[in-house]
Amino acid sequence: MSAQTLTPARTALNVTSPREDAVTAFLGALLVGGVLTDAWAHTNRLATIESFFTPWHAMLYTGFTATAGWTVWLAYRRRATARWWRDAWPAGYAVGALGAAMFAVGGVGDMLWHTIFGIEVGLDAALSPSHLMIDLGSVLLLTSPMRSWWSTAEGGLRAAAGVVSMALGATMAAVLLLNVSPFVRPAPTEPYVPGLSNAEHLTAVRGLGSYLITTVLLVVPFLLAHRRRATFGAATVLVAFVSAFVIITFDLPRVETTAAVAAVVGAALADLAVVRLDAVRRIDAPLRLPIAGAVVAALVWSGHLLGLHLAAGVAWPPELWAGTIVLASLLAALLGGLASRPRQW
Image 1 (tube, one colour):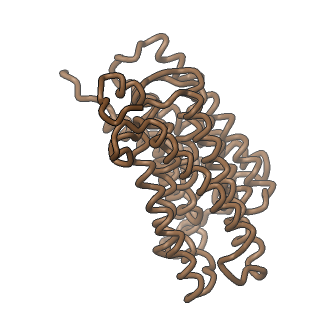
Image 2 (tube, rainbow, N blue to C red):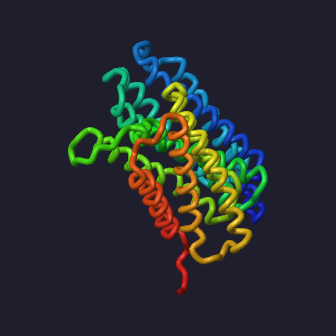
Image 3 (cartoon, helix red, strand yellow):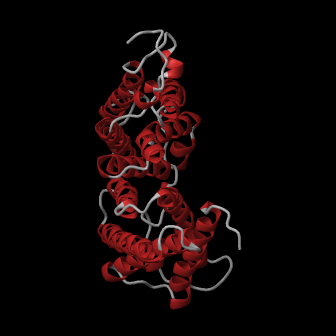
């Protein structure tokens, strides 16, 4: 390609093909798989981890190298000037390249951190500076196909890659929130005893908070995608990826796994509902996003609580478990309102 040519055709070249986005999503899944094995090892095999150099870190960094290398190649093959590293990034991938650089710096920092301070246990593992940088960089890198999808608004393979990319990014964000996830500890199965300072009350408060925090984690990316077009499977894949990461990390406990499967079923029902609502009400209907957010939250958490009840029995009083669903739905509706374009009333 001539270095002197900078024509309108270059704009077309700076959009990836659906197949290229699918490859990026696949490589990103390998990266997240490496993170999952590392999280599983930290949770279940910590006594055997003595240094930074482990098989799990090898899988993680192999996935990162493949994803980052592919991202750079997508820009290099579209080079039209000597400064391709600045000008040739396909739509949605420049931010991903920034994420790759952040991940690389965080990875070196993580090696030094482990060498100096040892292996983290529990909450400090999520909050160490190197892990925070790695996590943020991975979210930016993994969501490149999502941004590419949003820039074109296409369906088919590009939409599928975009949805998977979005779910992978949300999963990496969920890594930092494992300690406040309703998929980890089934608080509604534990008896509730009123009182401001007793253990049962504090457990219920923590459980309610975990539902609300995870509502934000799931509903925000869903709404950003749904704002552009209704895409069947968006909620289902999001909930499936986030919940699967959590329950596999903790060795597939029976009660939590049953509840996660039920939550995914709820997400599938939500997908059916919001796609049908768009078909009936059209995409410019009033309150489209608030309604979609509320439907997703209500059905996902209803499914999750039903799964908990079937597996172990929900011990919370109806006011508490039903109020949790209502409060999460109202929060999701508020997020939908914030994501909506201003309207003239």
